[in-house]
Image 1 (cartoon, chains in turn orange, brown):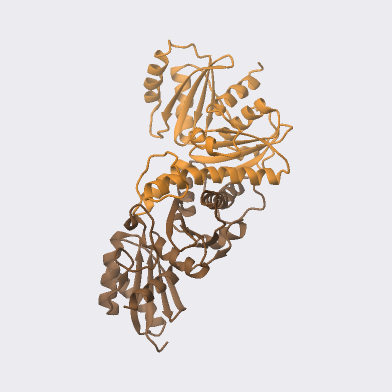
Image 2: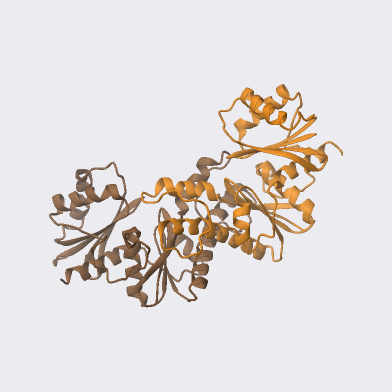
Length: 254
Length: 258
């Protein structure tokens, strides 16, 4: 089985694929101080819970360089598998038309590959994670570039830490946009504010490329924002894992 | 400046702005860091030497809006000790001339009321105020001049700081508008996300507030990032950097009529 690992700034997601089917998935906090042996214990327990799967392949995307080393060492010592770490030199099957292709984060490439595989059309990917990242892929399947904005979670944290009179609120949609108390005002600003940020950026991207594009969202906040969005057509929580599976297949000649 | 002047002080989470009004005219203005560890004596030295640089105008009154509770006492002491005036703090019990339709009117921070008053004085129409400070704050005043409510979103500055602190591979960029929305390198991608992303956040929220209240309200922006974002916005009609100071002047006048 293939283990796909997506190391993000906040969470690390593990997905276990049997062929092209995601059988199991787990989410751990991306703790940069966590050691190889701690990963060893945690994952051994998680794998034991699903009947000790036979893992013979691993694909990794990481946007946290120190953690990449730890995950690589864990794969080799605990699973005896050399992982495919997506980066320069790895075949993605997608032309990267960025100024410096090596600069594009591997999560962005994995998302683009998975989204285009699904649409085979001009596509915008919206990843609502630690950062809010938008990617544009042409109808021919070329990665062009994108947009990086602060994510909903970190921007909300900053608001509660830095504004003296504000306090943390539950992240739910208030009944109205215009609020008559502070808790609703903050909920409205975070949810309708971020939906506006995404919809506005997608609209500006579509205007710039002079044509429509399919819009697929992923990331921790996608399912919260998508129902209010005018532009997001589809949510796939596991888009990055799916992209890792596709990139692995393209590199192993399958 | 021979006649007595009004000193207006707007204490917000990141910066404190001081303005000297001669009648309705803003003669001088200064911007200081809001530092809750700084004492009344330290502010006294700063403000004293700024006023000296302006020829030591005779200060007849002081109006203060503070959205930082620990600073309120410091500013109060500063005014009494170094200027010899008792400041008027905008808050419960102060006449604003504007009905506040919030669930708990005392929950609306002073700067928001002050902005609303200054904006409505200018438009005399349904108005949305967008204040780009530590938070991005939206306030809506009805056509009849009632403060109805608002929206609070993270500010551009603190949200971008969070991005650089929390995302391992991203780095601080200069806050300028990139040529294209779709960035082909990381610097342009972040500049696009910050500038076009925030413009989209503002335009989207303003549009939603207008739709929900079935009005075509006037839109006035203020705060540090207003001049950067307003040119790209489809909804902001006007920028007034000194809206809060102007509101403090109006409230002072309304309370001095007693």
